[in-house]
Structures are given as C-alpha cells and as structure tokens.
Image (cartoon, rainbow, N blue to C red):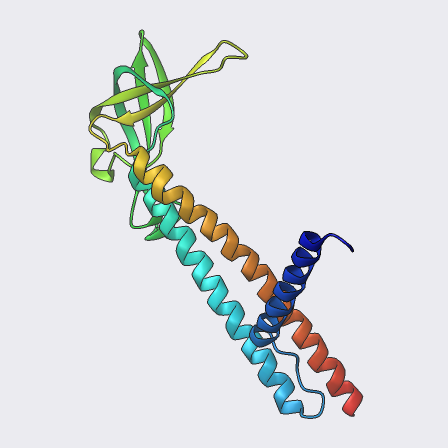
Length: 206
C-alpha cells in the first residue's frame, strides 16, 4: 500500500476495530475455563446485559408509540367534515401498541352522500364515553397519482395534529428503538454463546 492517505485510513480502521473489540469483551466477557463458578457468573452478567437492553429498547419503543399516538399525525390534506355516529368503543390496556396510557379505539358509522360507511377509528380523539353519540369528523384526503384514486382518513374535530411531534420526536425515538433492538440481538447471541460455552466446559471437567 503506497498511498499515504489509504494507509492512514487503514490504520484508523484497525484502531477502531481494536477499541470496539475491547468494549465487546468488556460488555460480554468470555467465561473463564479454570473456574466453573466464574463461567456461570459470566453467564449471569450476559443475562443482566440482555435484560437491560430489552428494557431500554422496550421503553424507548413505547415512548415513541405514545408520542406518535398523541401527535395525531395525518398525512393527507384536509377535506371538510362529516357527521358520524359512534357505535362502540374499546379501551386499550395501560401499555399497548398505542404506548403508555389508555386510548380508545372506536367503531363509527360515517354518513356521506346518504351512504353510511362503517370504519374503525384509532386513537387519539374519541373516548369510551362517546359511545352512542354523534360526532363531527375531519376528513383527510390522500391522492394516489398512479391509480388516480383518492382515499380518506378521519379524525375527530378538535384533535391535535402535530407534524413536529411526529417527525421531530416520534420518528427519531423509533429509529433509536430499532438501534437498541440490534443491541438486544447482540446481547441475546452473547448470552446463548456464554451458556453453551459454560455447559460444554462443565462437561469437559467431568
């Protein structure tokens, strides 16, 4: 390798590999071969790291889901309002796909051009107490340039629609949760490897 710039890049790459290798061995240590107790202590450390990674990834994902739900983001263009009757609502668990908190998912009947249409309206906006009431829904049109068709999404009038919360907070948190998910996969693989190694060496000691 005669190019000085390429040689410097190679040296930097090797240095980074050594640093990350040292960090990996510190996070997921190899079980010692001469002490059975140390082998299972290393397994316990790997399990602890896995539990922490799962907790972080799950917490960040649920936080992202909470912000996404609360943002009320609608990708379409406003297209007027329509009346709708709330036929029934189901309340979510305190921790659900919508994130933290209790959110209502309601079945509503929309009356548009004398043609009733029944849809399921997801959170946010409606509450279980709205069951049986007639509410006003805002329509959001989404145009498909390929087929030429227009689809509609609906949201109760007065619901907050915050693009900033969705793109500025919910999306970055979702990306962070995905990255933490990779850490979970790495921690799980290291835990499985530590258990297999400890079992194999226990058999060798017998």
